[in-house]
Length: 596
Image 1 (cartoon, rainbow, N blue to C red):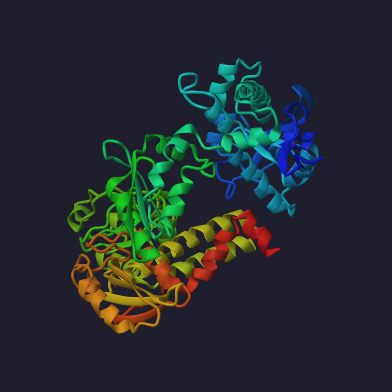
Image 2: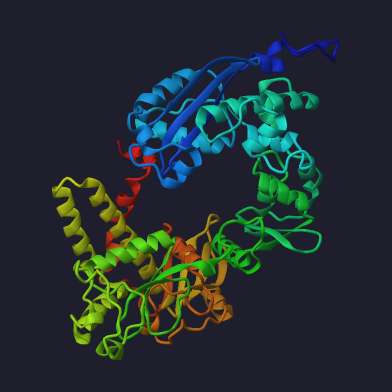
């Protein structure tokens, strides 16, 4: 049956078929699932418990609940949160036995979860690790539904515990998988009752409801009317002129318009759109200029709805102190103080791993006391047990002379300046010994410690090499047949421009160089005074320099002019980048699946 018939040149509407109405919610079989895990990321954490409840038409059809052996110890903070201990999962089935049962239990159903991206992400990672293709489950997220159905005057937030209290569920969420799944079932039923007032009666309407644009989004579509179709940066501002959000795009008009459609489902962004009163744009010559401008604006204004790149000043560095008996210290500021720095490093944990790898190669002192020759001569220096363990030269009690300790400090300085061979050799000896003793977990920990050091050193060497260049001019073929030009001075993007198709590039290059921003040398003046990986004093952050380096690595990029020598140390960490990738890929289930 068709939805319309033609009668004497006119179109007469008729009643549609049942298929046009969608699948009634009372006939949909939902499997509500909840997981407990060892951490927050599917890349480096594992599932410890699965709970699932199958319901249709408000009637429970079955349950599935089991602990899962994650293959390793459960962190103490997870035990404190869930009550699941390592002893409890020791005798539990592994994921390779649990996953097939769950997939069969959920086959042909609609998956429901509270904060679905978290649970579905872990299930997809488990499928990839076990060699299963992820079934095309329809997914419903009760968090998204709650944000659309319930107002702030009804619930302060959309946490499962809050919603369970609001709907007065019989089951209280307890951070155990099956109990939380049962509570989510009752929350789902409560939300479906609310959806009736919105005219939502089918599965198709239910899934589209959370993705439909909000009234605020529809009301503010006019903010994108005057946005140009060009690469650049856009800024959402409120009525007082405060910058709420900064973003970039190769097509500003298309990107900004997407914020006012159903394709934008991030609740924080929807909230931001509700506060925005204008959109300001900055048209850029190239995509690289847009990316760099975005980073600078975020760092300058720190918009409340941006999460990335807001605090570049919080970078972490590994520092070899400038004192009579140097030591390794983890700091948040890179100064021109005569010390040597390694970094920037992504996290404090990675910095601690890199420091431990360097300590394995060089017996530097690990105490924090200010140690001087005079203090040692008077016998007032504090001693520790590391000397007895052979982990420190112990200049504090006179076992090692200042000259002998200076040799260790010079070795550490050479390592941080570019020769990573001593660290790699020391770690390799230890890894081989542990592996020969069948202590594979300890060997893997040593490997990861070494990888953290090599990754930090490689990053620092690349950034330092760029930061030392007074000027670099490069060109990349444009999509229209012309060229994109960039002028980089001491790591900072000083100018960007384009060359039209079939035009001679030289006049455009000369004009761009002449009008480029003046950038002063890094701290220390001479290139030799640049601390390894330190951003130049001109204000180019590590993130900005990495944007430039990624652009320079793109296919087709050509060097036009170069002032200075763009080199990395011959025995530096850059030669070990492939090894780094393999070491870190071993923790990624999707990467492992791709290599099978």
